Length: 288
Image 1 (cartoon, rainbow, N blue to C red):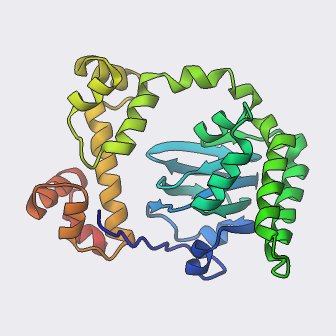
Image 2 (tube, rainbow, N blue to C red):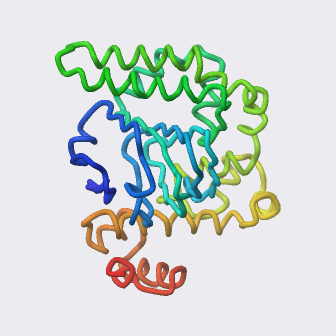
């Protein structure tokens, strides 16, 4: 697998390389100004939890559009592709970026909580207005712990603080979803999209996914079209194109390397495929 060397063209107040090398990084105020100019898809190499305390936004998470209205939580997992479409003038949020090691340790603390499964399943969840002050205090506390460089145990303190907050307060946001979770998790669209996210680089034929789902290709395509508005093939194509766009805009990989990364038989084949879907060549899109 090629080293993608993803970069992040986000107008953040600190050096991005420093952020991504940290186990946990917290920003207590993310506003519309800081998000200005972020219009291209961004692929995350870390998990991010965002608390939107004011305003609203339109955001695509792995091609699914969400209108998120405050107060709400948005959970972005590793390898998710995000595209911010619109942000209200009064938008204000706090967020925490967590490394793979940090999220694994957090998982060990929360894996026995019955509300943790829907927390990992649903990217967007509403927050009870009565809990807003609790969330604000928690982010301020996490920021304070993170900034205390004299404390050799601030990593452990952060993990314990976040897990404790989830058990005491955060889990309340997911209680109403616990009964819905088993149903949603077994719906064909959810299972199909999850499989596509894992295999779209190598597998682009419906037979592979239909076999995994133990249904016919015809039933899969008909179900996806009826429930999502797009056929199963269109979903696969959308993931391929979105990944191509991310690699073209967010890496220094050559077009040949991107073609190889996406398992196209040749750069020429990739170029024709991309132009058919986007109306321009990969090079033209990169320079646009």
